[in-house]
Amino acid sequence: MSRYGYQYVVLRCVPRVEREEFVNVGVVLYSQGADFLEAAYRVDEGRLRALAPSVDLEAVSASLETVCQVCRGVTGGGLPTLGGLGRRFGWLSAPRSTVVQPGPVHGGLTSDPAAQLHTLLDRLVD
Image (cartoon, rainbow, N blue to C red):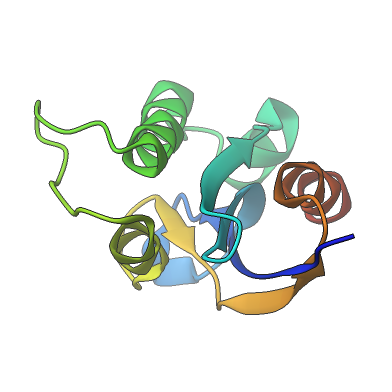
């Protein structure tokens, strides 16, 4: 069974950047060896509203959909043209001051990157 190295970032919703409070809302997983880059997310409206009652959930969902589009290599309409999977992951994992931010890059080994993505989502996004 082949094992592939991977890197991932947890996506955080930071409704009020100045407070530095966040709720984990997604994961982006990249594996060069498996030629894999994908994101998955789950937005818990109740947790976000508890943290920031006026949070724009549509904007949060739109930002997370943009992440998924970048993973798939969709361009145009304001999306960046980044080339290969590694460059896209680098762009997605770069720090930014927006409502959806990536956490630190972590890594591991897996035989199934898609299954690992969903395992991480279940473990890290509640």
